[in-house]
Image (cartoon, rainbow, N blue to C red; front, side, top):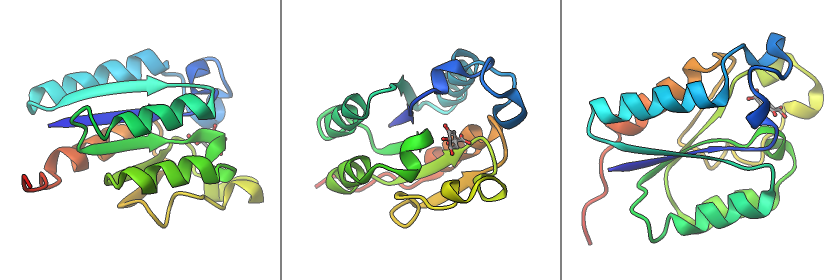
Length: 148
Ligand code: DQA
């Protein structure tokens, strides 16, 4: 089993960036916890962050060949803008959960629309870094697709 955790632009700044919205934990600390939780359940967790749409798209395409069976993604600002990232997820056809640290619905109107939510298995927002842990717990319990 393998779960890929994808983080979009500016999430490398967690810990420094607008802590009132995004909390005090660094991305490294969040990822470390997710890897540990995966290990405890025998699931490989790989995390990848990029500020570039292109790199996120390429990483999603690579899931076709790297054994990833579930994706947890916080597309960050690309949530509200990226048809290309949406199409990449639709193209590889892997189940995914969309995560946001902040409650995007309690913020500016431009954050209320997501290009991902209708394709996602589910969406978690407003629960801070815990949201990633809940998404991973769900991914760990998600039935493994039958071998072809
Ligand atoms: C975010 C919410 C987005 O609106 C914002 O652009 C982000 C982070 C969140 O985790 O709350 O960069 O996805």
